[in-house]
Image 1 (cartoon, rainbow, N blue to C red):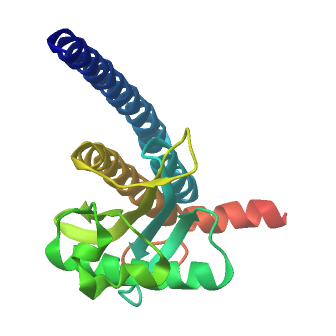
Image 2 (tube, rainbow, N blue to C red; image 1 turned 180 degrees about the vertical axis):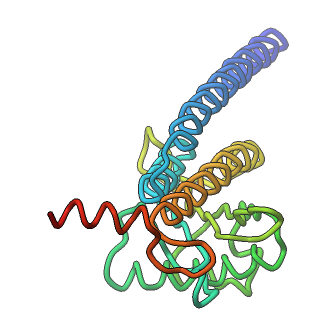
Length: 220
């Protein structure tokens, strides 16, 4: 009997060791994928491409069922959805987007990422209305100002049809990804302003001489 217990303990330790090694390897792989995505993000001067890469790669690398990115509208000051990656549609999408609004308000107020391994821990968010069990959310900052939010909902295992929960390791990776996205958005905004100022006088807001000359050449 003692021998059987020793063999069982050794087998359990061996299985645990293999699982730890697999987790470490998977974590390293995800960090590498985030770094590669970060290079693509920072190198993308077009805002639409930044948004597309931001949601799709965040969902794929962190194995999220849904990814939503909001940016602040300069005219209204509201945070509006600019990119969504996921399969929700119809009523399910409406419920998800309403939840995302509540989550975004929460992280904007706290000005810090939020990780809910069990979404029911925060009843004020009413995650059950959208069928969400776990979430990651972060404010996107620029010059100490919140310019948007990135939220991921429900972790899905890639090797089986099941819904998992985000944990501490996912939160670490998510923060790393969000930092790249913040830099990419800052670059995209700067490039957009430069393009605008090539055609418009910064003080008056009217077309400048260079723009008028180009238009004359085009008309001729």
